[in-house]
Every structure is written in C-alpha cells, then in structure tokens.
Image (cartoon, rainbow, N blue to C red):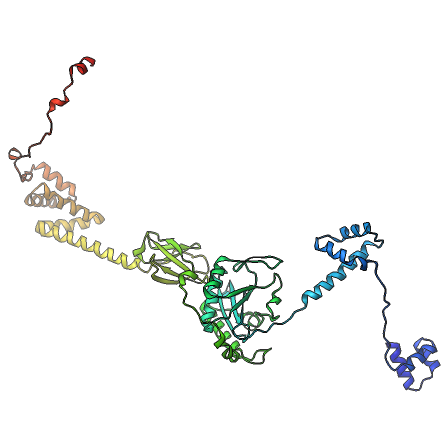
Length: 494
C-alpha cells in the first residue's frame, strides 16, 4: 500500500516512470501496473485445503468425549493422518475460536407489558461507621418498562430472596407472569446441560403461591436472560463506589433516593423514563393475591433464658421478662432486623441485629424496674420489722435497736427477727427484762438475750391444752389380732 501511494504521488508530481521505479525500488512494469489500476492493491490469500478438514466431524466427536489434543492426534494417526501434533493443536484452537464466536452471539428479547421480570443480587463491601460490612444488594426489574426496585440484606438466604421479591411486588403494585433469574442455590438446586432444572422447594412454593413461572437462565451465561445490559453497573458506579455511611439506616435512605432518581431519568436504551413506561405496564401486571405470611417466612423457635435473653449468632437480645424459660419465635428480616413472636404468633418486639460481636451483655430494659421494685419490697419488709420490734418492746426495744445499728451492721434485721421469735416461748415482759439487762451490760446480740432468758429460768408459755384431758378418737380395728397368730404346723416349723 505504501509503494502504491508513493507511485501515485510521484506520478502526480510529473516524475518519470524510470525515476519512480528507481526511487520506490520496483520495476518499471510494476509502476505501469499501479498507474493503470485506479483501485488500491489488495492481498489475495492463497486458498488451500488442510489435511485435517476431512477429519473435522471426527475431531468434534472426540472433543465432545473430552479427549485432549495428544489423544486426538493418536486417534487421527490410526486413521491415516500424516501431519504433525502442532497442526492438530492449531486446528483445535481454530475450532474453539469458532465456537466462542457462536456462544458470544447474543439476541435481544423484548417482552410485552406484564410479561416478564428479572431478579439478581450483588455482593458489596460497604464501610459503615468506619468498619467494612458485607451487604447483598437485591434488584427486581420489570423487563418492559425497566422499572427497578432495590433493597439490601446482610445475609443471602432463600428467605431473603423471597422477602425481596415480595417487597418488590408491593412496590410495583403487582408482578409479571415470568420471573427470570440466575442459578444461585437460593433458587436453583441443579441446572443440567440438557435444560432439566430442579428448583429450591421453598422458592418453588413461593412461585406457586403467587402463580409465577420461574425461568433460570443458562449456566454461566446470564445473557440468555434476553438482554446484555449490566444490571448493577449504574448503581455501582453512581452510588456504591466510594460510598461511606454512618449507619445502615443512612444507606437505606440513600438507596431509596437513588432508586427514585433512576426510575425518573430517561433510560439509555429506551430514551424514556422507566416511570413513564411503567404507567403503560402497570395495568397489565398480575394482582397480588392474599398469602398467609407464615407460608412465606420461616420462624425459628428460641428458648428464653431465666434472665430474659435469647441468643442469635453469638449475640444476646432482651425479651419481655414474662417469657423467661419459655419458647418464643424469631423471624430474621434481611439479616438486619429480628421480629419476636410468642407461640401464638403475636408480635412482641422488633430489634436491630448487631453487626459485630457484642462487647458486653446488653442492658435489659425491665431489669432496672424489677430491681427497684425488689428493693422497695425489701425496704418495706425491713421497715415493718423495725416498727413491729419497737411497738412490741417499747422504749427498751428502741434503745436496743439503736445499739444494734452501731454494733451489728448488716445483720441487724436477722437479730430483730430472732428476738421477736422468742415470743413463741417466753412472755413479752420477760423479753423486755432481758433487753433491759443487755442494755446495762452493753451486749447487743440475740444470743445474749437468749442466755439471759434461759439463766433466769423465765417460765415458758403454758400450753393451750391439758395433756391429761386430751381425748383422742378411738381406733377402729377392722379384724381381730388373732388372725395374725401362727398355726400349730407353722409353729412346729419354727
């Protein structure tokens, strides 16, 4: 091409053919040939037949069986091939390039309003309050209008996928007939090469309750969804990349705002906002049926400890104290929140789950009130005990109480209760006399009063009855004792 261009340029300048040939380094005939031809020169590759072309079908059959290049070469030699091993490897590379080109060919499938929706999720590391947190971003898009719904979770279970889809249906006010998704284990157990698919039972139950037709795309080929668009590229580059938040609630607010902006901006392919096209599709969506939430979301039983906590993933969460040692049900929402139910299904509380391991046991909101009530009852009982002691033993009792407070300390109430208990044996006057004696000698202990009572031999209280006049009911014997006497033969044996 360079020589052709130079020849044309020199000839246009009036240079002779002889001089052009000498300058460019070609023969004069070649110069005349290029000048006669108005079109630029073109290289024509020589066509030839390769020896391996006649073995093409046999080679493909061996590739389907998983044969490697050296094995294929050996088999071809047995069939009469006389070429080299490197030629076989080059031929195999050519076949692979042809197959890859066919696989990369993509056809776009545009569906009508309400016909199809697509689901996918993406993993992302989000800095939350300076700490990295792994989140899973869920996306549900209506294929016709491109109307999108976003939410996120901290776990990626089948329950999370089902909840994300159910929330998207509520957001759209309906749903499409077909759901296209990848082959994640949360939805698809196996997807064989022949197209046979086994879906996850929980996911299949969800589709049955809503009347949705699931459609898993081909393994490792997401473009078979019908569109080659990158579902998370825009949200990743316009929101997630470089984003740092103070809390997950802050991220939820940002994500909702981004979703609203996306749905109202013109779509790059359709040139219309998804919200505008959604108005055309909304009437074609299926109506949301009435489904028992218990059929969609699994609740796990948890035993409440005797101090009012349940454990989940190594962290403790408070439960109303009336459920201590009982069983409650928990429902995990996107790995971010926990709902507590009693065994009858009544909602008790909703709590945020901890992102990291708790540094210490959390404070139970009811413990302080219960402890205050206990202290009030305890103080009340002690006050009643002091009041009874003073009212029973009068001024000596009050003076003895003051001495106990100074000498005894924490055991004061035990001494008071024991001294009051002596009334079951001795009279109040005798006890007052013993207390007075203790005041004189400065002894403040219940045993001192007890020894004084025993030493002075105070008369114990009289019994309420006379044992001599005690009348016991007659014992009725149903048979004569003679029946227990041994007979003659039995006595002889003894």
